[in-house]
Length: 394
Image (tube, rainbow, N blue to C red):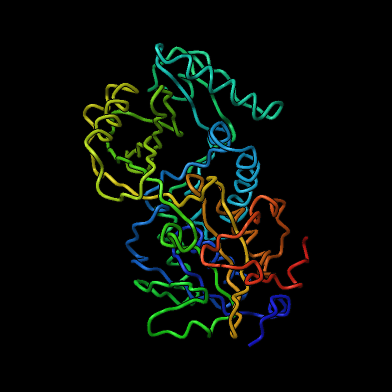
C-alpha cells in the first residue's frame, strides 16, 4: 500500500470518514467534489441522526462567541462564513436559501442592563477597531425586529444562521446521488488503527476521524450537555437570531421555517444525554415569555438534548497520526469543535484537507488547529510520525 500522502494527492484516493455529523458530511462532499472515492461511516443512523449537528441552533456568531472564547474563534469564524457562502454557491440552488446573513440582535431587560453593557465592553476589548457592533435606538430596533419591545439593543452585523436540519438532509442526498458509500449503524474504533466489524479497514488509503463525543476517552474528548426547545407560533415574527442577556444564562432564539423557533441557553459540564430537566425547561420557557409575552401561546413541538464535543481547552484540534503499524494507514483526527460547530466547520475541513495533502487552499489557521495530538492511547512520541511530504505548508 502506498503510504505517502504526497503521492496520493497526485491521483484519486479512497478516503474513509468515521462520523457522519457536520464535519463528516462536509469532508465527504469536498473530497467527492475533488474527485476522490469516499466511504462514510457512522455509529448511528444517518437519515434520522441524533448528533450535535442536528440538535444545534446553527448560529454563525463570531462576535457573540469571541466574548467567551479566544480571538482565534472570531478570526476562524469569519473565514468560515466566507467559505460557507462560497461552498453553498457550488451546491445546487436548493441549498442557497438555507443560509441567512442578517446579523443578530442582543437585548436585556432593565434590571439586567449591566450584562448588556459588559457584553459590549468585552467585544471592544477583544476586537478593538474590528468591533462593528452598533447600538440601536428604540425606533431602529423596531425597524429590525418589530416584535421586540426593548428600550434599545445591540446589533451584531457579521452574524448568520443556517437551516441546519434541512442542510444535513440535503447534503446526505447529494452524497448518495454522487456514489459516496454510506455505512450507517457501523461504529469505527481506532486502537490505534481503524477497526470495523466485518469490514477490512485497511482497504482505505486514508482515514478521517470525526466522531465527536463518539471518540470519548480514546481521543480525550468530553461531552458538554446542551438543551433546546422548539416552539411554534404565528403570533411572533423574528428575522434574525436574538440573544437575551441574563446574569445566570444567555438565552438565544433562532427563527426557523414554518413559524418555528429554537430556544436554548444551557451549557452543563456533563456527559449525561438524558431528556431535558424540569429546571431547564422552566428557565428556557420563562425567559422566552419575557422576550415577548405572545410566546405564552406558542406550542412546544420538541425538546432535545445533546453533547457538544470538547477538549480540555474548549478549542478544536486537527492533527495527523501515522499509525505505528505495518499497514501505516494515516489518520486525520478532527475534534473539539465544542459550541462552535457550524461556525468553525468549514475552516476545519479546509485545514484537514490541507493536512492530508488533498486540499487546493492553504489554511491560514494551521497553528491554531494543529497544536497538539488528540491521541490518548499513544505511549511514546515516536509512535506519531508525520510524513515529510506534509511539510508542504510548514
